[in-house]
Amino acid sequence: MPKNITIQKIIGILLHRLKFILLATLLAGILFFLYSKFIITPMYSTSSMIYVQNYNGASEANKESGKIYSADISGSSNLAGICVTLFKNSDEITSLYDDCRVDISVNDKTFFITISVSGDDPQKCANVANQVADKCNEVFNKFLQYGQIGNIRNAKVPVSPYEPNNLKNTLLGLLVGLVTSCVIAILLELIDTTIKADDDIQEIYGLPVFAEIPDFETQGR
Image (tube, rainbow, N blue to C red; front, side, top):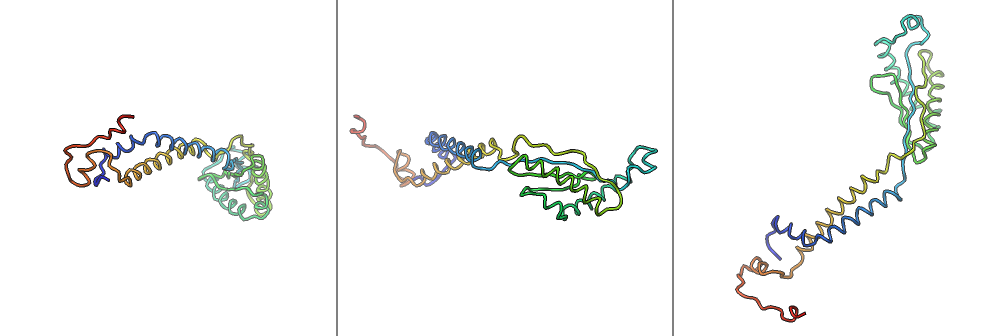
């Protein structure tokens, strides 16, 4: 076995076992793709959106101007944050989750609240998102005596899953296969103590080779 491993020798080892490396890489990519395609459960995601305002849209000021002022936006944003806390802790709302993963959050510095739902059933996800939005309206009117709430967007049934990403998983499999096969090829070469060339004798024992006896039996075949 050579005492010193150089970059050139590593490249030579990899080229010598190139067929093995390519086959192992391809096999790993196929296995990762099959696992992603047929084993991992597809997950779907959809969302609905509602808004809350800290004033009544029918107030005289709004009737006259028809505009929303920055003070109204700031106050409504604070109210939206309070509502999110209320909605997340309401048993009436959490009872509608139906084994789906639900996230209720405020869009940054706005009074818009997004209800994101993910799960393995696309129709169920859409139903839960819309039911939660409707229930938020009821909870808001039940506990708050000021402001208003309304729906902006209803959730639609997602047509394709957001995970697994088959392409990403296949590329990951190819990368894993490539790295693993290269490491195996190098390890096999390192533990191989057979002498394959004259240079091996000189590197292992420090002795120069002046002549060699050919294998006539092998050459005659």
